[in-house]
Image (cartoon, rainbow, N blue to C red; front, side, top):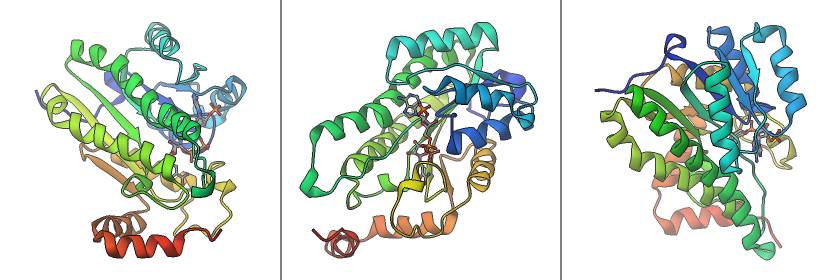
Length: 259
Ligand SMILES: NC(=O)c1ccc[n+]([C@@H]2O[C@H](COP(=O)([O-])OP(=O)(O)OC[C@H]3O[C@@H](n4cnc5c(N)ncnc54)[C@H](OP(=O)(O)O)[C@@H]3O)[C@@H](O)[C@H]2O)c1
């Protein structure tokens, strides 16, 4: 059995981290494309607002969830399948960034970001896979970042958590593909969202969130492994990833904040 991209006829879509930013814009795109969309995040009111948007067309359903709560994740999936439809496409997108200078290095920040950005995705995936195996089909996109290509200055926790998601997805993809389950990793560059609104530096090639959601939606309609946007910035980051350490670390030193 070869994996393929899911369609609204296969079941519903589940988007985590949909109370703002990329998840919010993607949920509206999916609804517009005919999907029934279950949306999750901690802020229930924001999800209800999203479901009430005219663009939701009655196809967006709120399922509040803290994705770091494993039992609640399984219960939420059960509730989605009972009240909406079996999940065919999951976009595990909930995540955050907390910049941390080397002088403030704190293992607790590392623990929190690993838990939210990486382990919660592993939990979501573990809850979905048996359901997909039973049907012999399914699709999961895990939202990582180009910050996972290399450890970036002030992003020791963020880069580490995102690198782990890329490696986990790479490792699982070949076996799952043969079971009819499509696994994709999403590596955005800079997208204007509440997450990046906090940045105090000029973000190169910053993309608007609607354009990012459109690019992500296009990628979900394909079987490609990696979905990237904006493409030029992501390709430049791939070049940066390929540089030898001596050169890459010299460039990183220029990006690092001065004490
Ligand atoms: N924007 C960028 O430039 C960029 C670049 C690369 C990668 N990304 C990745 O894209 C994803 C979405 O980011 P965004 O830019 O759209 O940021 P955002 O607007 O801050 O959205 C983050 C979402 O995650 C949810 N979330 C946070 N903690 C959660 C938890 N414990 N349980 C459930 N949901 C939780 C938030 O909702 P609640 O607060 O309501 O829970 C929110 O809906 C993240 O994984 C981020 O790392 C973003």
